[in-house]
Image 1: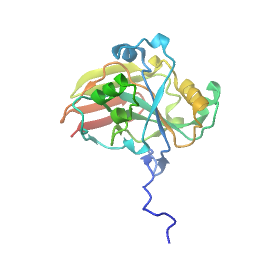
Image 2: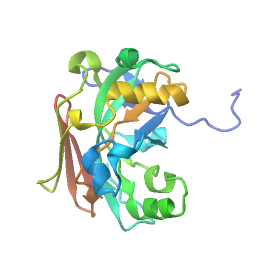
Image 3: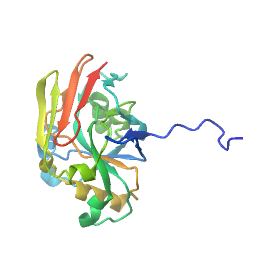
Image 4: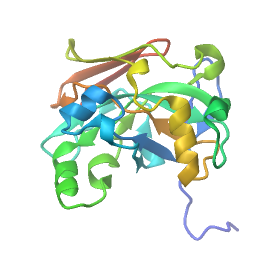
Length: 228
């Protein structure tokens, strides 16, 4: 007899490139406005802001070639991001030891119901309705850090229907990967299975059904997603 009173949900997992193994997802942390040019385009001064994070749900991460346009929105935006997957964690992790906790990296999209997020901002409410909806974070299979290096630089680009829309470099991040891990660990107990989306360069914009997005990060597989 099962100990569960209802059928438990399946664990959220991500495939690992070149391996038959799966990476189990525990939590998803997302940093906001981590590229100066994007902070400016969103109406903020990056020199005066400490880092801040919001969360998506683990099952928002999906390895897919299709993004279903969500309900209740008429202004859905793309945000190209590098994903960092942790193999271990803890609290108060020193910056100099942070990369020891990284399992690997992937390419992701932080799809956003911008109109709903805008309403939430004006009303001082949480962002989940604009950020944490179903299939809002398409992602590639992960690549182990031993195969990529530290990923502290390298181009990150997004094309929409063949036209270049986002064009940045990982070295433009205001808060680097070790700093993000260290900062988060001061407020949360990080653990194996946590995924961090590291922010997006300038150039975010709206999508429509039929649009095709391609996100590339140097050294990682590309992410190709069509809006349906």
